[in-house]
Length: 246
Image (tube, rainbow, N blue to C red; front, side):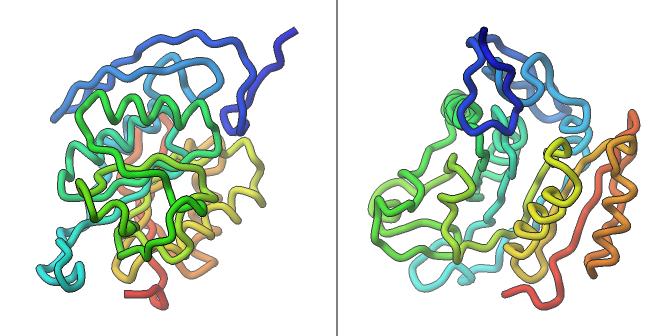
């Protein structure tokens, strides 16, 4: 008997059933590949859709902020990317940005990679997990990336994200099924990776603890702002802590 996977299983064992879903927003329509063993495989999750309708992009960086000889870029993360609806949208809306699509699920990463490629987003080299020794700039590019075409998107596991990398914005439809304590630890870890002036955008259903999460974030010193409400979902914008790195 084939086991039942959680969408946060690192290596899904469920039998594959490839299909496509259509992401429709005011500014874009994209067909995305999905499969069993990933989050919301049968449709674009309504929480994700609400986030994409209301989530802002960070301001474009000032000229010269990328360092000597480097073009300034916005660095964006889709944490728990699944098959990539958020990452694809970010890459299309912010063609100057470096987009990191991050997931523990290897099947989700495979699908996100294919969906980014299908809309023409250039893919960076393998994330630095010991495969490259070059130093990373603020966008996470290493010497290998800069030698050729600049990375637009990189799909990787959380462990493959360079420790020193900081983000201008993090977008996340959190995996609430992992439990409150684990969820709080996960979000705190990514919020610590925000640059000064950056923000995270989170979406969660009120019946799954959105209002409780907002209170816990406020108690931790990062008071969220509610961007949108719809279908029971809350979209929250969480600012970087005052002590965040520039």
